[in-house]
Length: 411
Ligand SMILES: [Zn+2]
Image (tube, rainbow, N blue to C red; front, side, top):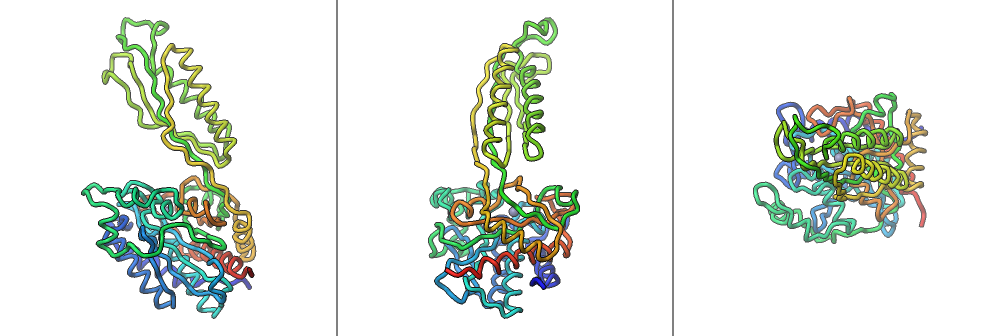
């Protein structure tokens, strides 16, 4: 029989944590490096200490909770996610991965099972990026992706810096915020999308994370009177963008099921209902988990923009604002998760994540993969975020099996 975690204990921890920074509509408000975030960590540390673990924080406040292995010289197996939330966040985004990890440790204790390698549970600082606007900040610093000083200097809307708030809470630790070796890393998370629920599956075995690129498209034409100016003589940025939007959405469909295109932030000048715009800008976000396909989607977008410029006699500029490459997770880590799922007899599919996670930065330095469970309606970043205790139990049991496999490796 495969080992399983204690679903009731996990659920009671999840519900107790949801009482820290509760919102009016049943969600959670524990914004990064706030009093509520600190209260959440204190509660976690109480549980972890009772479970016999030690804890350390690094320079950016990432918290690492450790259960000793038989051979303390081996690189640990890492679990973890984040405890901070959006201002009107749910009870499970991030929290589930942390408390699922704690539950794995408690289940190993219950079984009196000594792993070969140590097991660590990370709580990454400021994953959400809403109060201090850099998402996955703590793991980005850990991965040497973001400079420590740049992160410490981030300011919230009240003028407080990350450095000041870390000091106030006593979170800035001795441990260097830089990559340390891990045998394997697993992040358990709610899917935050509708696919697993629609397919009525227990678990998603996550093989990677979509790459994305953000652009600003700027189209210049000639302002003209909306009445007397015949359509065929206009240089109309709105006419051009209407063709581009159609083309780029069609491209996303052609690159289905994982291709994504999102236009937003439309702005035109002059601000007038009866003048052909002289300028139109908008943002575009395109996503795909395979780099070659992401490149191909970009090339088609650029061709469409150039063709529209030609057809409508307008000027175009495309600025790249963000370029986050696709992440392909480690085949061994994916394999351990898949074996664990199969052992438990759970229905599943392999899938890619549409959202970024701390695991993306961890994966830059360590073999990594993720485990998803369905969430009600695919809703997340919302007080209504919801999973069942059975779904919570499934995902954490998969995590237990994956960790036990990875942590038995001999050097
Ligand atoms: Zn999250």
